Image (cartoon, rainbow, N blue to C red):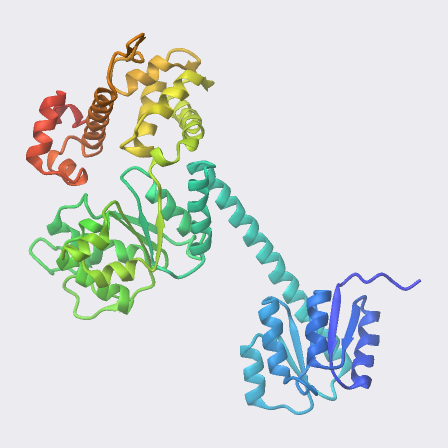
Length: 471
């Protein structure tokens, strides 16, 4: 019986029977399965059907130019190793073949030992590439599972995971759009981790949290003596992110004056620190996030349209929690587990009635608000399970029974019910935002997209005080 091939399949595409017969004999001894094609068209058909592990391809074929066949083979299977054969060495053609992805280039008549070594080397390189690609796919699947675990299994969440997988390996600048607390930074980190830059820094900058006079130096850095008080050189966030990713959170808060400088940096890939005479090359990928409608701001002259289009080469919309309620139970259990470990509370479960209460909430502060509620409930619970009462207390209001039904109907009309729900949601949104800004009413007003006076009146109505949120 013939020896079973152990090295895979070798495809020989050559119109000279003597050459292809010799190659077949040589490599059957080397435990390869060998298939032969007389021309380019037949070779491409066999490549599609047999999925060879390595190809020996003659440059001069009767029907299709060998370089064209090489190009189509690489389009079909980019990692497929190909050894080119030709009757005469032409440097220009050899360079073209190498650029198209040929592994080796041999002239006829070839030395049989040299051919064996060359094909084996190409085969080993292809096997290694295939192994690396398989590992990358496995790592990618693992990252997708991690992001799914963080976001949930709803259709809306999985759409975000798919978009992250699509764009992560590219060089695109990404704009992540979503309300405050939806998890935009988690999405940005997942893009970074899914890219070739994953071993380099991920540097985040909140454009709304740093005072405007300090923002330029924080982003670009400065040289010693650039201004009064600059006693030593400081590297900015962009310099720290070299080779990696810079995440610009709430980019809509970036002052117009800095938007022009950022655009120049994005377009030129050059960084000029404050006080520097010359710029330097910069290799940084940008991901930006916003809870604003940047297109509307651009139309109103509050954001540069050219910067918006440069940032939004690829846009990911992260849906609010109220639009993906199927994820609430999953997220609640995950937050209970995290908080139990962090706070050293032996919580085993969250009861169905507590989950039902969570699922009825409007969640104006989205996932961040829900996580805070769960952490507070875990902190307050002395039992092994999270109950309805613990969630109600953490939500910051008395337990309210459902409207009683009478023969005349519910105690509250639909309009009254809607008004109460709106008041509750408004109060909760203001409380969450004040907590996030540590009681800073000016910043809270900006995040809530209202004016300071309106916020002050609402806080007075709801009995909320800024100092209660300063801790």
